[in-house]
Amino acid sequence: MGETIILVDDEELFRERLAKAFSFRGYTVFTAANYDEAVRIINEQKPALGVFDLKMPGRSGLELIGAARETNPDMQIVVLTGYGSIATATEAVRLGALYYLPKPADVDDILGAFARNPELAMVVEQDEFSAPSLARAEWEHINRVLTDCEGNISLAAKKLDLHRRTLQRKLQKYPPSK
Image 1 (spheres, rainbow, N blue to C red):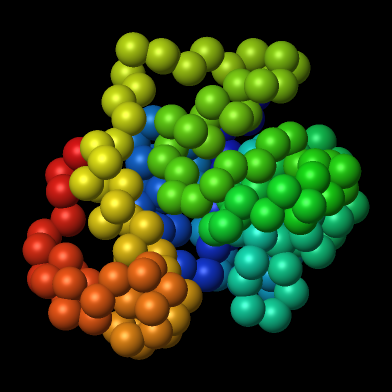
Image 2: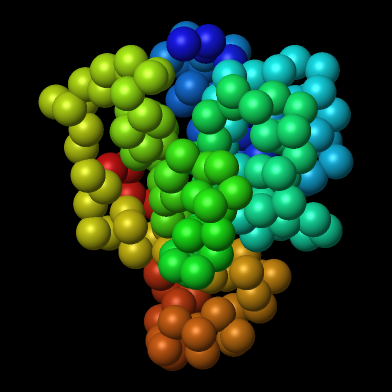
């Protein structure tokens, strides 16, 4: 298995966090924020693995799967989806993605998805896995919804079915460490 991976996600903080985690595990990491950047990197670097966000501004992760498979047919791809749309995730697998994961996914989740392909011969240390706490999962979900609402606290509170002041109090707390 090659130790090169491209991470394509329009959320910079999420993309950089994943990049650090993969670098820490010895991977050479390429990152892209959109379809065009990703296609350029895939054509130049030919990474062995790819993690694509399904929903990005401009062209989608579905379109990127097709372009990546044309250039680099052996590339193994895992798709991340923010809202777990089964129809779109199924379409991603039909187009050639190995697997799809709901966001937020961490490096262990992604490596576990790649390990589903026996040809990659990846070994994932199961004892390393520690599920995020409920508080951490809630914090990440709240921030994802807030990002989708472009920082509009009133709209995010409505989507989360919370009072606006309750959401503001939750946002003032530091994120749980685990």
